[in-house]
Length: 61
Image 1 (spheres, one colour):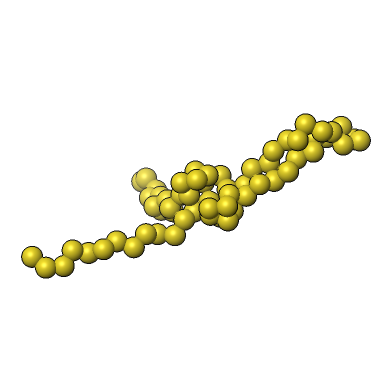
Image 2 (tube, one colour):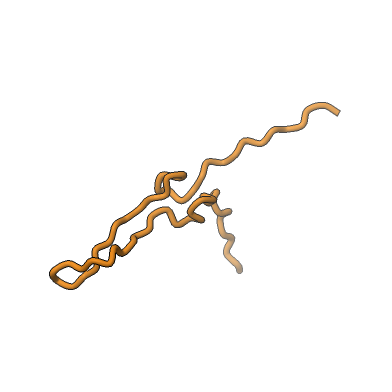
């Protein structure tokens, strides 16, 4: 029997669900590893999702 997946959350349109990235600066430490900085998405504040939008219901005829 197939398993049902939950509906995906609202993915952030700015980062496409990848809220934190690490960028190599090009410099190396004494042990030879690359120095990196981590940057979080300012729109979703590092969550990767956005809150659900409220929809307006048409009332009347």
